[in-house]
Image 1 (cartoon, rainbow, N blue to C red):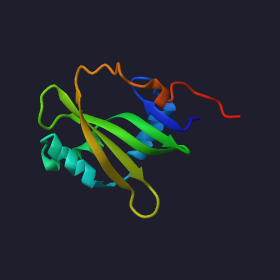
Image 2 (tube, one colour):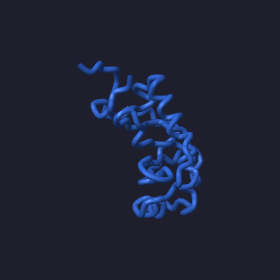
Image 3 (cartoon, rainbow, N blue to C red):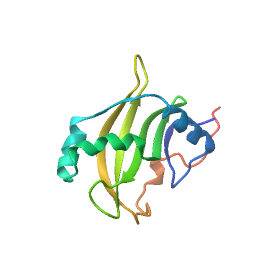
Image 4 (cartoon, rainbow, N blue to C red):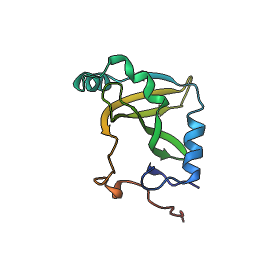
Length: 131
């Protein structure tokens, strides 16, 4: 059983969440960038074509809605800066037709980021049994 909410690997990442993520990523997504993502790539001076790799990055966060993976955050080595990673928020849409992965935004994360500023109240940190 998995509760709805946002899970982060640094806080709480049960096997059930990992299984849902793995199953979701087995689908053949049509991947596309949003206008906001393209603006962020320009802002960070990252190559405009690097966004295609984001869907294959390590999933470090996900949002679960009704036992479905709705959003993931992936981490990939920076396509420009040594010692940094690109983190991308990706919304997975599996309604009708071919599944879509909408890459919403990107930000830079340092290798030594220890998540000391993470707001734990925004995340699922344990299993809560529903009544």
